Amino acid sequence: MNRVQRAVAVPGLVAGAMVAMLILYPTRAFGAGGGDGCNPGRPDNFPTRYYIGAEQQPGVEVGGVKGYIYNYSPWVSSTDNPGVTQWVMVTNGPSWAQVGWREFPGSQRDTFVQFNIPNERSWTNSFPAYPINSNIEYAVTHDPNCTVHCFTFYANGRQLTDSNYNFAPGYGEAAAELNTQADQVPGGYNDPSPVSSLQIFMPAGSNGSWNTFTGSTFATTTGGASAPSWANISPSPGTSPNGYYSTWDSACPN
Picture 1: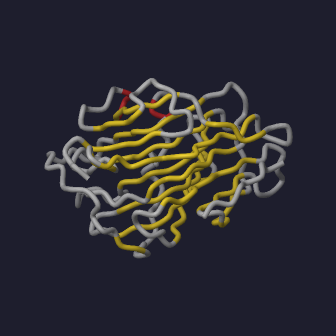
Picture 2: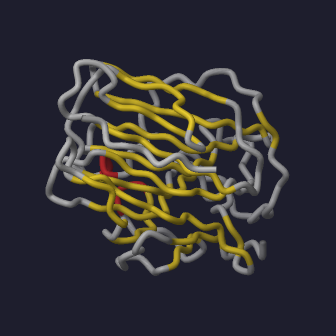
């Protein structure tokens, strides 16, 4: 899912250890969650989306985003078929390329890749889940001079898939995403869920390089309003993450 849309040569990868409802979600039963957190006990308001993460708009075409995302296993409401997700993404607003983990009702999990160019190309692919409570590097890279392999998606240093369709991303993002307040934000107040070594490649192409992700943190909901106080991020919204942030739900201790 693309938070930015609410309002409006391939870089080298260092090997490590969704709002379009028209996109169909494939059958998945690749992994099981262990329920790290708790049922927050909030009433269901599906589909209302919440985003907790960080973004950077460097003013140049972006060549990729990567970072280590903790594979937390949150409570997921039975109404939330799209699932709770955490991902890294490059986007220009209407279009996006995204990779991360998802957990669905019933503790089913997968690794997912999502790609969207409106009215041209939209798909979501599902891959086996990594173990819960593992720290996995997820990455998407972009080659602005491509004829093929315009966007390439990785998890744990392994290439998952790519896309031959092209657009010019101007943003990098990393975030957790919920589709109802009955879901749990990854992490608890005694044990926040981290995103670390977050980097952005800029400018796209052979003259670019990987840089620490600065930008700013956010906690928002549908329409761009600030998320409720139970959706937490550190450093606080509007602050540079400097390559690291953590999230948690005020209703859950762990």
